[in-house]
Image (cartoon, rainbow, N blue to C red; front, side, top):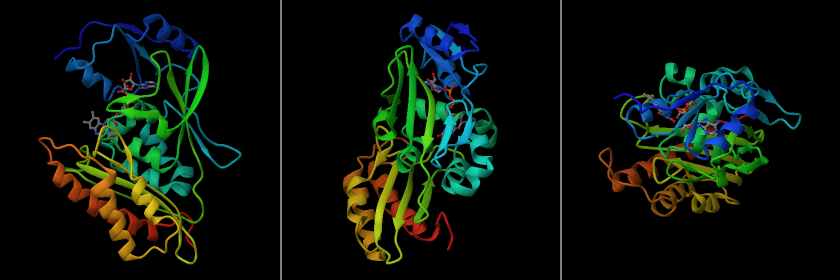
Length: 293
Ligand SMILES: Cc1cc2nc3c(=O)[nH]c(=O)nc-3n(C[C@H](O)[C@H](O)[C@H](O)COP(=O)(O)OP(=O)(O)OC[C@H]3O[C@@H](n4cnc5c(N)ncnc54)[C@H](O)[C@@H]3O)c2cc1C
């Protein structure tokens, strides 16, 4: 199908984008990589009055380390650029691993980090990664800037806390502790497809094998990315053993998630997958240390 008619704007300054968002009062969509928006237009799932193309806007594609060691990522940074950046490969190998599973290289060449987060697809990898890494997201409107923890940004299926006149402008990714280990796994019918279920884990485990901090996020199991908070609480402060991993995986699958059943998988099958995947990512997190000693 062809998209319905829309007006097209190609501003070069952020202020113009924000003015246009106000002018259309919720009837305009920012166009980033177009990898989700253009198919939605073609299927007429989205019928905005105007598109505001972000591709010529300056100041949205920075990728740099801050003095405190966190990474600042402009909303228009392409997923492929983040994946291939030497600093990311060295200090955030989890990001590289996760991005390998987002669609295909051609799509990641155009798709942006901000576009994926703003789209808030419950089956997407990056929103769950944002929860596991405790990212903060900065949104901007003519009223000013707001910074939200990822846990407050995602509010439901394809829904975020952004107001219609706000644009996602930047993500901040805090440094991982040297004690941190990470794990990622998803099950999809084919590599590059949206996952039936996936999970991301970041564990801080000390020399005595005590888990000091646990972050466990799942996707494709609810209306948005889900933090497995009961499983995290069970792990925190405990010596990590195979038995504890098994208990945490059981708890995450039984109580932290409420997966949907659809043509791709039943809810019961998604819980079964979640239990196995969570156990896997926790075991991986004991092995994949950020700083090898
Ligand atoms: C065949 C195919 C397979 C795919 N497989 C996967 C997959 O396995 N996993 C996955 O996660 N994704 C997958 N995707 C989606 C892909 O990752 C997209 O790149 C991503 O979801 C959207 O990024 P984008 O930059 O293309 O955003 P766009 O498509 O341009 O925009 C998406 C939405 O976000 C809004 N938006 C964009 N930028 C901003 C901003 N800065 N502020 C506010 N709102 C904004 C737009 O208005 C639109 O509503 C797939 C896409 C295709 C075509």
